[in-house]
Amino acid sequence: MRNRQPFELFYPLNVWNAFLAAFSIAGTVTLLPEFISTISKHGLNASYCKRYDFTRGAKGFWGWMFIVSKLFEMGDTVFLVLRKRPLMFLHWYHHVLTVVYAFYSYPTTPGFNRWGVNLNFFVHAFMYSYYFIRSLKIRLPGAIAKFITTLQILQFAISLVVLLHLGVLIFIRKVECDFDTNIFLLAIFMEGTYLILFINFFLRSYVIGGGKSKYRTERSTKKQH
Image (cartoon, rainbow, N blue to C red; front, side):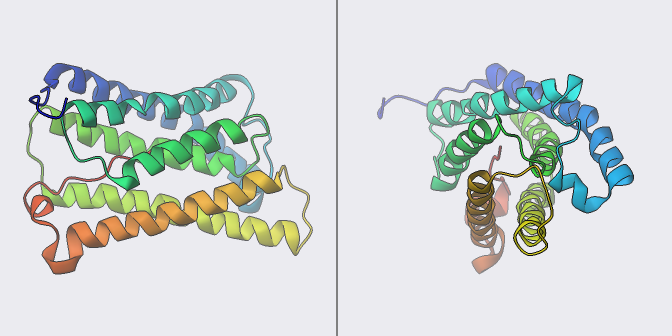
C-alpha cells in the first residue's frame, strides 16, 4: 500500500463531488424557506429555541438525509487515502465528531439544530461545487478557496454565537425551549473546537509567512460536514 502509485480516480471523484454538490444545493433550497419563515413568524430567538415543524414532512425527510449524509461524507477520506493525499487531523476529527453529534442529537433534534443544518447545507453547496470544478482539473483563482474556508469559519462562528445566546435564554432568562443539556454541551464543544482548528488552518495556509507554498499555488481548501 505504501509503495504503490496513487489512484487517479478522475471520473469517480467527479461523480462524487457533483453528487454532493447537487445534494447540498437541494437541501438548501428545500429547508431555507422553513428557516426564513420561522424567523419571520416567530422571531430570531425562537428559530433556535423551538423545533416547530422542522422535523415534519419533507423538512423531516431532508433532516434525516442530512444525518445520513454525514456518514456518507466519510467517503472523502477514502478518496484522500486512495489518491495518497495528506490526511490532516482537522479532516478526520471534523468528520468523526460531526457523525457522532448528528446521530446523537437526531432523536431529540433540539431547536438549534435548525441553524446547524441550514448553515452546513449552504456552505457545502459552495464547497462541493468548488471541489467538483477542481476535480475536472479546471484552475480557479486562489481567492475562491480562501472564500470557502472563510465561509466555513463564519458557519462555526455563527453557530457558536447562537448556542451561547441560547445558553443565556435557557439558564439566565429561564425561557422554555426544545432543549437537551447534553446535546447543547456537545454542540458548544464541537463548534468551539471547529472554529479554533479552522482559524488555525486559515492562518497557516493563507496568512503566516505568506501561506504554505502549496496553498500559494493551488490555494486548496479543507473539506467540511
